[in-house]
Length: 463
Image (cartoon, rainbow, N blue to C red; front, side, top):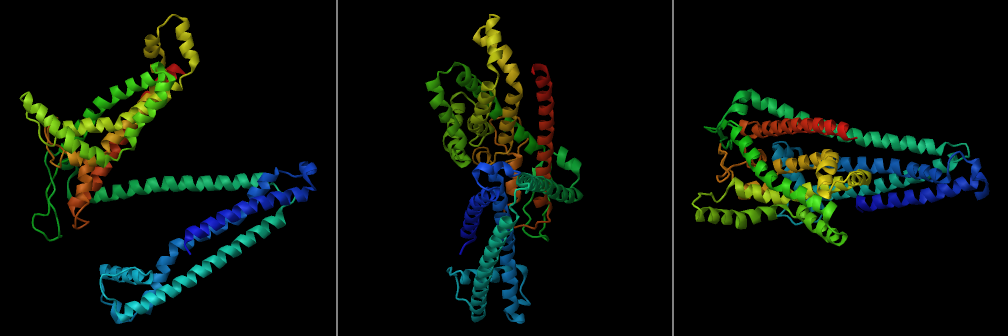
């Protein structure tokens, strides 16, 4: 039986425990008419019982699911002949384990398994059955024990509300800590790998070099495995495409937000906003196809008609399509912020004789500016992090140019390119992806700090 079925049963048991705990509290109080004898509302006694039933069982299920595969694999490999696994490399051992698991699960294999593998698969299957039965028994025992504990300790003096809120606080702190530690782990992993890269390539060459040409290092001993790691062309390409995208997205998004929030009738707003937000749900690969097959040829043909040489893969085509993609980010967030401006500010402006356009420019826009800046920053982050459109419409050439008609590449595209393929992980080519990621993180952090400063300044002025 799958863990998802067991999870469903645990949740159902928690619901049943809630109702039983609530009824138990009412019974202890001596009936509905004497509820005031209880320290907390009956619902909190139900929550208390549900937590005692669900939390231990859920923790056991989570731990068991995470450890079961590794433990069963270790026990299965211990039953194999020592001469069969002694000379296997790590990759070959992983392939053997995969064959045993596939055979135990009844999946098809590309080759005829040996007798040892069949015996190991049968042993793995037996262990899996024992583990599943043991898990069900332990979870059932925990559910019953939790119910008995809650039933025994449900008394009028039980501070159920305090205990439930304390448990809820612990859970919130735990999940918040997981989020913080995950972010910290990502930053530290990128930082440590970047330090290894800068031990191979000077940071001055990386930050100020004007040539980006990392060689493909298939093997550590390959001749010419090093290359040029000047990242200036990547930063230039990223800024160029993002600038073109924002040049389209910000005016169109802001003007559409102003129209929908201040001018559009209710019927128009009801269908126009969902239609506009559909653009945000289109996969980026579809935008990439649109840019490569429609926009790029159109721009090239238009350039030829006026005597301009526009490449088949250009920053202009990628930037325009990316701008179309991020219009909903600017428009939707800006409209929500504009609608959140108090109506009293509008009424006060109209009372002083201002027109609607003057009210929008001099009252609503300044009051909504912090939220608008936040929406624009989100759009900028979306543009900087986009990969698929750039790959399909702007190419992979790391050209140092400010000409939007030429082919360029971005930081995110190069990160994907550097980490694909079969090469040594310790090579400078692979570690360069972490250095690019660290640089992108630092730049984004600086932009956010500047934006927060701007938001704080205007918020102090208008609140």
